[in-house]
Image (cartoon, rainbow over all chains, first blue to last red; front, side):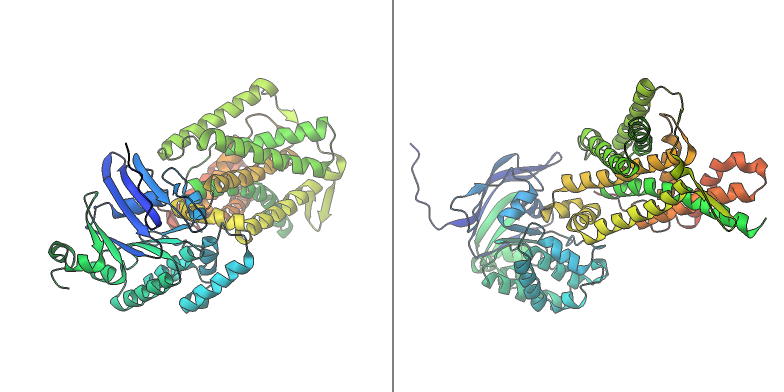
Length: 253
Length: 298
């Protein structure tokens, strides 16, 4: 007899034992994790651990061989299994993925990049409101709105990528290595913005090489090693964990 | 060699270039969005010519309606080619797409020969399209003016669609990064199909023009405009629409001027000039005139 468990707090995203292959490589070997509402969850781990694969599977670019990905946006009363859904359907449900390397459309203008983030939305006034509020957060984007996006600096491109992801008004924002290739001051202000975005009610799932920054920002974190979750807990717990310190924090906290 | 003679050659070159440009745009749009050359693209020109023949000459439908019908027919053929050939093999190595489209090309030509016979047919437009207009030393027919003006209007319309509409923005995004476009919620099947439909509609209308200009059509006529427009697209930088347009005009003009300005014994080498032009331009600009380095999509 299976026991009926009462649902505890409603998670926004619940990944249940997913197995993902890339070509013939068995990348995710049974990963489970939860992201609560309004939480910031960090995913840390070495190169090749499967972090990017996990994010690409959530947003529908890859399909798991096995396992479930349950997502429950605020507007829905039930969890939806999105493991077989297309990226288009998943964006529509409220997950926005800001990929590694930013993936901005360099030949489109800055303005077009932001507008394309709102591709599925219909209400022009709301889109304009969001555009204005993103320009308040990143004033440089407003200044350069007619420029080709490819002409922006790395930091500006990252801001554009995040701004574009926000233009779909996501409930869950997925970020893959937002600090990659950026100087420490830019990273600092970027993380400040992420924290602000979160306090406005956007849930964030973040992959980050810079584990110190990630643990500083996130409420909870998961450590991924060769396709499996080896450790998880609150950021404080992980920051205090000896193994984590040795492997990811360079021994200093 | 008088100035009037040269002006005449330039007008002839612009007429030919307009047709090359319209066909080259399709090569470039399709390459831009799926990184494949559709070798059956030239045969859409042939289909456009035969649709014109059937509707206009046989059924006597008014010319503007025929023009719209030919655009539509071209678009529908493009959609069928994408759905039937390119979509099922999307993600396969490039060479698979090349060979598949070559297969479609051979099939279309042979279906044409089967049902329409290889016998060339006369393509005679009514007098109001054949009337000779004389401006100074330059003479041309009404159809030549129609070709130049309508080609210009269609290109302007296309640039508007691609740069000023939401669908166009989605197409440009898809051409740049297909995965990212999907993450934006863009239905890439729709954007790819739109590129095929628009490019092929222009090839179809080029068929109408080709028939009107040369007066004779047969089921294999698509080969020459297909090949030369492909060259035009490469000269302009394949993937770039302005490049395809510029390449089309460069090719049309240089072909006519080579033939017109060199002694008549060389006129048999007209097609060789086209490729000499291609080689010269690629020696200086390996990616074509407007070509960006197009990286292979991972």
